[in-house]
Amino acid sequence: MGHIFRTWFQWGFFTMVVQIWIGAMLMFSNPMNLLGKYASTILIFFGIVSFINSAWWIVLGAIWRFSQAGQVTTGSKLVQTAAELESNTMWQKALRQYQYEFGYQLQSGDVMWYFYIIVVPAIGVITLGAMIYFIA
Image (tube, rainbow, N blue to C red; front, side, top):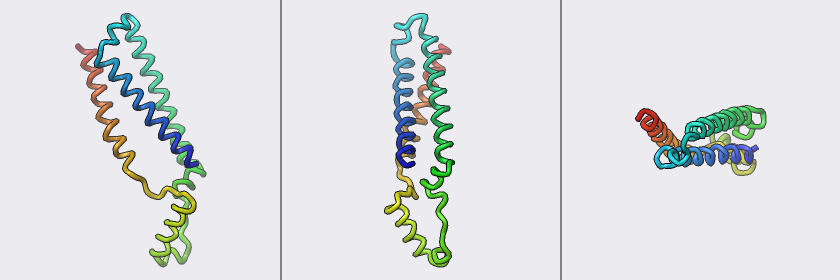
């Protein structure tokens, strides 16, 4: 299941990078004039494809995450034994074993934080650029 989550993240990350790149290219350079009368049709098509891709990405991610296998993989189904309930040290040792021997992802890194720092402002800039372009 872990490989599905990694593939899902890569799918979302790289399609977002492509969407930002194409959006910036179309909004902040001269290709719109080169496309002529088809420019608005191409933008609408690009928007529809981006929306469908994003919707499927979110839906499939939710299905995979909240399926039985997804809950097991992310550690949501881990249960403390009676001895582990009494001793925090035993529970921490069990968690390390789950993480290193069985591959549970019990904590995350900073990748998503950096992803949001890059993507959210980029979406804002592209949206602002699109609004200025279409209003002016």
